[in-house]
Image (cartoon, rainbow, N blue to C red; front, side, top):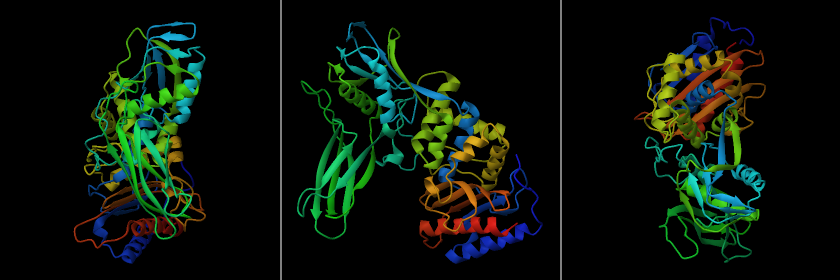
Length: 478
């Protein structure tokens, strides 16, 4: 697969070196803190800087995971969520229980559940005399990977991973000012749920800055006579919001994704006129004598990879890794560790990359280490693999247009840049492909790892410097 000539002029290395030096001098950082590789796909690099240093890649790790997923699963693979039943159906009544069985679909959202329930309607069941159980046994019980940098973070990007998730295992918190000064602010949870208790302590002020603090706090499960689940979570919203301030939205993860999904099934069935007698949701493996009532096929792996790369979705990366372990071993209780073994095997066997550390498929880790030259080599392997390249490259954020690059590369008019970003404390990176007006393709890897003695530099300045280097190289080096 070649676009334009792949032969670069002999002076290219010196031209790129000059561009890199100029832009790094502008932000006042030493070249020692950077790993940079530029070149043409399928050829030796044209410019390298600290290419053999093992550096933290942050979310550039998702390039590795995406390539492995497409290689092992194929782009068309889908994961199926089902509702099964026990007992027997007589007329419109089910004398038994319902089981929501997670098939590992990380993108199971409100629309997915609505379709699953609509399919359920055709069974003719209008009343369930038992209760709802959730079977998430496809994955293991380690919902939060110990390799994450932020193990106990309550933000959506650090959501727990279950074989039965719903809405990214997260809840939306919307905050608006009250009708007049001094009134309580308006706070809404979406979707609504009785598993989450809301504490609203937001004050509406006439003027002044809006200062809000939104926190998720766990509460103890309490059994009652009629409602067997008291709230498992508490969302606390405090602070002040100005009277003319537009609506604010915050995203918090849910600690108990399987129960969260089961509770939403109860609510969605209720909205469609289906009554479940026992107001209880529990976890339990589906019995062998159960029968299928409804099912829903999720997005293809190609679309899941697109969501993972465009928006750097950590939950998708970890869920697909556990699915990889399940598909390869055909054994319930699939773990992240087992899935990572297959991703490492892809790097070693398919890419010939052996000098690396990979403890997290999402990159949300302090442990992961890759050499810039090996990430460059990965891009070359991807580029040459027609089974992987089309879906992967179309999944990369498009500079200045969408995903994590929507507000970046302001000076890239006339260029096409598709790349994955990486960001952690002390780590900034970008890697991908670029095409200039002459049609030639360039691939690049730029990684910054903060070193002791580096002067403080704002993240946006580092990102802007990298953007400038890439755009200048694409314009000037040919």
